[in-house]
Each structure stands twice: as C-alpha cells, then as structure tokens.
Image 1: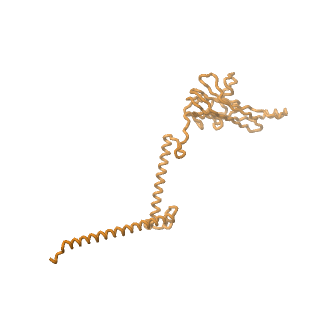
Image 2: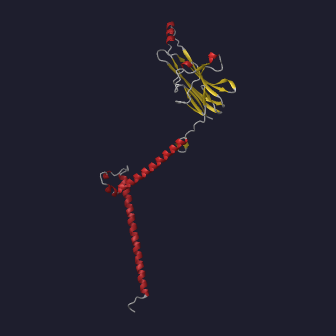
Image 3: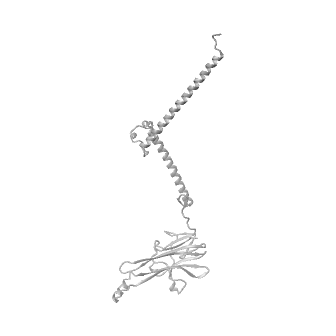
Length: 296
C-alpha cells in the first residue's frame, strides 16, 4: 500500500534522527566546554590582576565605603578574602603547633631545639655553684694558724649558700662549707673570692712622719683543697695570689682572685676553699663563690 512506509525507509529516518541528536550533543558539549574554559581564564586573569593591584593583600580600598552586597559581588574582594582566610588559618596552625611543642618540652624537661636537628647541650649530671652569704658581714672562717694545725694553708671559709639566689646544688651536697662529690669522674673546679681592703690612714700617717715613700702591701691568696676519706691530710689542688697595696685615702681597695681547673675526683671526696686575710673578704654572692661540675 502506498500509505505505508517501507521498513527500509523507516530505519533510515530513525538513523538520521539519532545522528542529528548525537551531533547536537557533541556541539553543545564543545560549546559549553569552551565557555567554561573562557570563564576560568577570565577568573584567573582577574585574580592575578587583583593580586598585582593589591600586593599587600588588604581589602580593596575602593570598596571601603561600599555595602556588603557590593563587596561580595566584586571578584577582587572575594579573591583577597579567600587568601586572607588561608593565610590566617596557616599561621594559626603553625603558631598553635609551635606553642604546643614548647609547652610540652617545658613540662617534660626536654631541652629546647636551637636549630634544625641540633639540640641544646645537656646539663651536667653533677654540678654545684655555691655563693657567699650576703647577710654575713664577715665570713665564718677557721683560722688554721691559730690552732697550730698545719694540714692546710689559710683560713677555711665555712659559710656558703647552696640553695637560694644564684646558688644551686644538682646531685651533690654542701656540708660545713665543703662540697661532697657523689661520683667518680673528671670535674671542672672554680672559685672566686672578693676582698675589700680598708683605707690605711694610720699607716699612711706614720709613713709620712718617718718620711717613708714605700707603700705597705697585702698578700692575697686563694687555695682550693680536696679532702679524701682515705688520706688524713687535705690535698692542695690549685692556688692563686696577688699583691695589693693598702689604699690611701677614704675609699677602700677592691680586689678579686679567680681560678679554675680540672681534677679527677672520687666518691666521698670533699672540696673546700681557704684564703688569706679572711677578715677582709666580702661575701657577696655575685663576687665570692665557688663550684664544680662533672665533665667526663
């Protein structure tokens, strides 16, 4: 019948319709893809332009007096706001991590990191720094020459502070002005004594009457001794001395002696300091002190 389409003709129509639909979809995909790429490029250019025109990343000055709706619709404002947010979040996370690490190290006693991969030097296992007692006008000293005992030279200083102020004791003890060594090893030992010689007005007057020009001198000496439980006589480790002229006039003369060195010590050894002219020694904790610490 002429009113009916043949199967071949009907199939051709369906195939043509599918082909046209496929072409339309492909054209639409290419078109919208080009539009999206163009929008991305335009947004990227505008973002870079915003950063170049506002290098300090502050909010746009021109929008300072604008409404919130105008600000939110401006692309540059959006870009700078996002950058502000990311920068603030990154800095907050970094500071939070640094503060947490520092606080944790503080509580656990971990030494601070000086630089990447390098930690601070560990504290000595045994250390002591004892100072003069500021409230004491004259040092508590034992005069060796008065007792007739020739076991050590000078006058032993028996009054030292080991707990307050600048002094400290770490794994060691202070008894009767002596530091008790807790373990064997090589120690660095140091001491400083400070002397205040009063003016010699009477001596100066006598010298002027006799026409003498020579000034009287004081011999200041500092000794560091070690006592061993196995040996009855203290052993002199080191000494330091200087000659000081008695001051003329109203002002006192100020002099100090300092010395330090290493010595190998055994458990139960004791360290103590003796000086000459102990009555002129000033027991200021910043001027008169001695100590020791384990080095190996």
